[in-house]
Each structure stands twice: as structure tokens, then as C-alpha cells.
Amino acid sequence: MDGIIIVNKPKGCTSHDVVNKVKWIVKEKVGHTGTLDPLATGVLPLLIGKGTLCSKYLINHDKEYEVSLKLGEATDTMDAEGRTVEEKEVDSSILEKCNVEKVLSSFVGKQEQEPPMYSAIKVAGKKLYEYARMGKKVEVPKREIEIYNIELIGINKLSKEIEFKVSCSKGTYIRSLCTDIAKKMGTIGYMSGLERLKVGEFSIKNSIVIDDGIDKEFIEKHIITIEELFKDKEEIELNPTKLVLFLNGVKLNNENKDGVYRIYSSGKFIGLGTVKNGLLKRDIIL
Image (cartoon, rainbow, N blue to C red):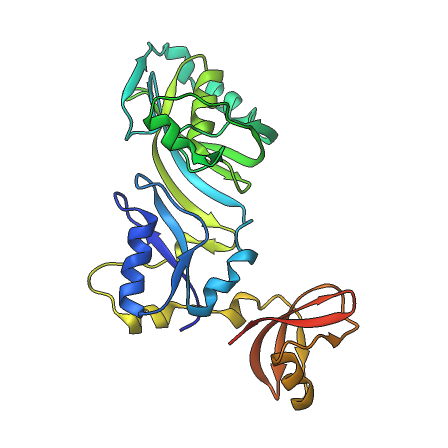
């Protein structure tokens, strides 16, 4: 079983929990292209078998989220799982629709963002959350991100929460975005809810739920094969002689443009190859 499945991760479990559960079911190597916090739900692509070799092509995908932002409180982890470290009154004018929409729209575009201390980014060989747990402060390098679109979904003036949908680049921390939005609104806040709706072309509409009732046959029915995953890539057909050379790692002369190609022989899908500087070499072979 080689390919990818799109899982709708439930709240309260880690991405590794889901990976381990699928691994136990399929008895194959399983990996993911990027974790979701235990608090978060939604799209979690899982790579199975030789599909794990495709991760290098899938890690730069843009993402789309539905977010809840609680105003008037700040936590040490910048989400609902943390300890409250500050509280502040929220003036009713802050929650007026025109004000909220104006602040949200100001975040569209490229910008520098400071990742949260409770994250897995490494500084001097240690993950930031390790420093945070020790109570140590370190300088966190900012990174460039891009917000493509952000739109208000709703405002709850009673609970002082806003909901919005955001499309963003790889590497965007929604917890940091929530903190920055609250600050620009003139208050404090934390991410109280998060659902990932899309990772690249993978949508929650096409996701499956991993529960105790599923088996290997169910997963196999929903797997996206490597051939299907790269359906937008051009084909290269190899005759039997060239196929043997290709499979043995020999680079073949090829006039196609540099890039990734689906490789076939006698109409059968063999795997993926890459062309660079007029040479075709094997990449992922089934």
C-alpha cells in the first residue's frame, strides 16, 4: 500500500497518535507532512509505504484554517491549553464588525512573524518549547510568511470571541497571528480553536476519520496512489532496455524540461523520475 490518505484529526490527540494508529492498522511505514497541535482538528495528510518518499514534494503547501480567537485573556502557550498569564477588559467598540474586519484585512500580504515559544523550532540545538518549560527566554528569529486571504465568520460579544477563516503560506503560526490580531485590536488574546480546512489541494471534504471501526481495507479504499498524486506531471515512456538502465540508477539522456515526471514502461506506471540538465534519473520506484 503506497500513497497518501487525508485524515480529519480529532481534537485531543497528537498527530503522532494518528500516525501510530494507522501504522498499526496497515502494518506499513507511515509519516506525515506537518503536525497539528492536540487542540487543533482537521486535515492531516498521512503518507503510507513508499508514499513517505513523497514528503519532499508536499512540505511547502499553503494552508487554510478556521480560527477562533478569544479576546481579553493571554496564556503562556498562546492557546486554550495554556495557563492564563494576563487579563484585560475588552471595550465593546473593539468588537464592532467594521473594526474587526478592518483589523483582519490589515494582515493580508507578506510580513515577518515571530513564532511562539511553545513550538518545535530549534535554537542552538534545542526546541523552543524546551526553553519555555525551563522558564528561559531566548531570541526567536522571525520568519517571513504571507497571508493570502482572511475573512470574518462571526463575532460573539458575550464570550468576546471572533471566528475567521485564513489562507496562508507554509510556516505561518496561527497562535502568533491571533496574538498579533488581538494586539492590533488594542487588547490581548489567544487561539481558542483551530480547524485546518486545506493543505495544498487536500481538503477536509475528502478526509476520513480514523476510529476504532476502520480496517486496512477501508484505508486502502481511500488511499491516493502516487500515480494519482502526481497526475499533473507529464509522462515519460521507457522501452524495456532503457527501463533496466533507469532502474539500475543509470542517468539517461532526455530532452524534456527540468522537473518531476511520471515514468511508464509498456503502459505500466513505474514511479517517478527527475530531469535535470538533460539527464533523467530515477526518484521513487514502486
